[in-house]
Amino acid sequence: MPMFADTSPPGQCIFCRLVAGEIPSARVHEDALTIAFMDLGQVNPGHVLVATKRHAATLLDITAEEAAAVMQTARLVAHAVQAAFHPPGLTLLQANGREGDQTVFHFHLHVVPRHADDGIALSWPRKNPSTEVLLDHAAKLREALAAC
Image (cartoon, rainbow, N blue to C red):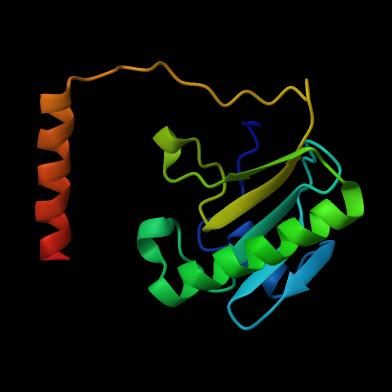
């Protein structure tokens, strides 16, 4: 991921300022809950960010309604990207927390048109845990889901 970091003073989120119209943006779409705009660090033509209008730092901070709205907007934008730029692939990327490579702490999702050899690498070391370990992880998650 590009290493852009929001250097706005505390309480002055760059995306909140964009939503409020305090800073310019190349807006693509807007509705009651979301805004979609061109990423300043275009990886490929048509790279769009879809963000919640309400400030929320991560996926864990948005409502179910906002989560659904972001995905609906991302789907709409993906169709527009496909029609306008004809990329052979598309990646949706959403990061949470510093360790998750989040650089702007306002919930957003990247809609990235993809091409062969475009320089984007989405890889990680596979750990290949045993079936027993996977079953244990699944049980822990089911238990946590029951408490939600």
